[in-house]
Length: 126
Image 1 (cartoon, rainbow, N blue to C red):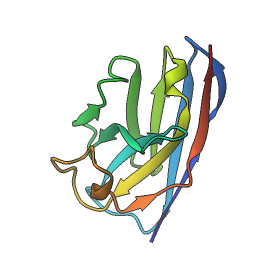
Image 2 (image 1 turned 135 degrees about the horizontal axis):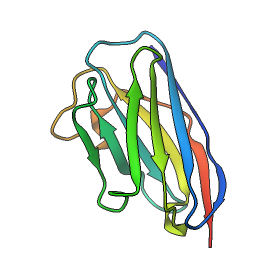
Image 3 (image 1 turned 60 degrees about the vertical axis):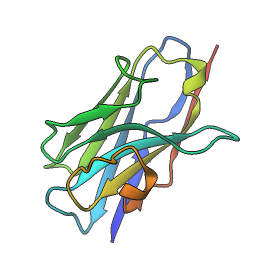
Image 4 (image 1 turned 90 degrees about the vertical axis):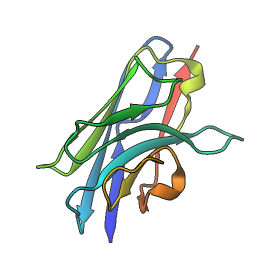
């Protein structure tokens, strides 16, 4: 089992920044991929960003490209999401996800990930 715990959510004004962190514990896997998803009220959970084990492959949803940056520290078993130029439409619960295998071609789909955190709320006021 892998446990994922997100932190860093909160309330921020539009145009501001927030940094999210996800700490993994328990059984960790070599070559695992990590991702961030989000779910706004009344909407389906959607892909935000994904990163390979080495960090040399990173993918972003079009809606956050150029504003969000995903990174990881394998020594610390953490993955981070730096969010800049936040917009009210970024308001959602943000979830960290872990895939026990290398990053696949369907990294943007929920089914590609094996473990999920409980989520952290991000609220962007206008």
